[in-house]
Each structure stands twice: as C-alpha cells, then as structure tokens.
Amino acid sequence: MPGKLWFALELVLDGLLAQELEPKSRIPFGTDPGGGAKGDQEEDHPFAGPEDGIGHVGVYPIRHPERLQIIGNTEATYFKTLTPEMQEKVIHQICSLPLSCLVVTRGLEIPELLLREAEERGIPVFRTNLRSIDFIERITKFLEEKLASTSSLHGVLMDVYGVGVLILGKSGIGKSECALDLILRGHRLVADDMVHIRKRSPSSVIGSGFEVIQHHMEIRGLGIINIRSLFGVEAIREKKKIELVLELGEWDTHQEYDRLGFEEEKLSILDVELPMMRIPVTPARNLTTIIEVAVRNSSFESHGIRFGVGI
Image (cartoon, rainbow, N blue to C red; front, side, top):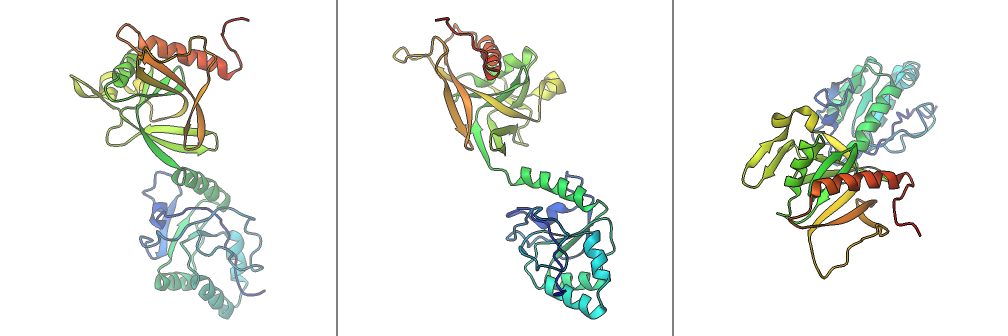
C-alpha cells in the first residue's frame, strides 16, 4: 500500500461555504461539526461529486483534493488496519492537501489525530449518521439546486391549469391586474414583479419569487397586497416550472399578428427554449380569458394536437 487513502466524493460545489452543510441547512444532511475549522474561509475551494466510488482505498492518491471528501465505513475500516506510524503518515499527507472539508458518515468515531491535524490546517470536519450513499444522494440534490444557473426577469409567473405561465410586458401594461384576475378565477400566483429563474436541467427552468416580496403583488391604486393573506395558501405556489411565455404589448396597427396560430416563437431563458406568444392589449380585450385559452391550446399542442384551419 502506498500509504494514501482515497476518500472519494466528487461534488462540484464551486464557491459555496463548507458551513452550509451545518444543521441550519434546510436539507436534512444530519451533519454536525466534528471538529477542525468552521469553514467560513473555504469559499475558494470547490467541492466535487461521486465518481468511481470509494472502493479504491489505499490504491490511488486523492485526485481532486480541493473537493469535499467523504470518509465512510470502508475507509475507516482500512484505516484501523494501519500501524500507528502509518496512520499518522496518512493523516498528515491528507491534511497537507487543499481540502475543502471532510465528512464522516455513519456517525463513525473521528480519530483524534485527524481532528487535531484538521484544526491546525483549518480544514472543516463534519459527521453525519447517514450512510455514505444516502448522504451522497442528498448532497447531490443540494448541489444541483445551489449550482444551477440563475437569472431574473421582470414579469409575473402564474400557475394556470397546472402550467407555469410567465407573463412579460413593459411596466404598466397590466400584468399584475391580469394576474389578480387569474387568481380570482382559481389560478395560483408564483411571483409578481421580479421572477427568480433557476435552470433545473438542460431542458427546464424553475421560477420562484424573491423572499422579500414573495406572495405579494403591487396593484396601482391599491398598493402592495398580500395574496396569501387575502386569498389563502391555495392561491399561491412557492415555485413552478416555466412552460409557456406570454408577452403582453400595446396593439400596433402597423404590425402583423398571427391570426391562424401557425407561427411558433421561442424565447431562450438560460439556454432553454420556451414557447412564446405575443398578445396585443386593447381596452376591449379580456386578457384573462385569452390567457386561459392560450394555456389550454398550448397544452394540446405539447401533446401533438393542433386546432388550426383545415386545408
């Protein structure tokens, strides 16, 4: 054996603090500080995610030392087979690397020598009662959310018939008033004014409201109203996948609008192409009804059903 343990976990956690793994996290990692530094200085170290597994203990050196490393039952069992001199050498070698943090799973006892060396080197050490595989599953979901590409748009996000509808348009066009009418019809508000958008996968984006203004809506003449307080929790959603974009604009007599429903427009948000419709606004048009019909029609088209003019 070359005297090096490979504590393998590859989780790309670029720019996050190790302290985000502490119990205050809303993700149930079950971690508690096992010793070492608190981790508030570890922002420059990216973590990394599951690669080949942890069965290569003692065979290869740590290939990505700057990433989060997991010590599970396999590593702990192997470590106990080493002589005291070799244990000290291994721990010294590991802690001399630029580790972001160490996580000990299964509630295993952390060697005092490791705690002491980690404290001297400023390496955060955590312990969890979870099995390695369970911790990896939870931390992976956490990282996917934390590291996803994000953006924000000025608009309103609604859940209409179960479809996430992003309503865009210049200020004063009537987006919030239209959303309020949709709420009165039983649909649900996700975000008003500013929509926080996070890329969930290569083909989907999730929208939510910013915490400060979440569940609130600005209606000119009324001011800021609390939708949750006025209409109850059934009138709101925390987040929603965006599936359709509707852009409201003033009616322009010099512009040609789609009259047959054959034109297909797309809007790219975080490199995800979303179907978009442009809806001209006039005082005589019932935008709420038009949006409901647009959502129904879009749902049918997404299943390959089109209601166009027969030729």
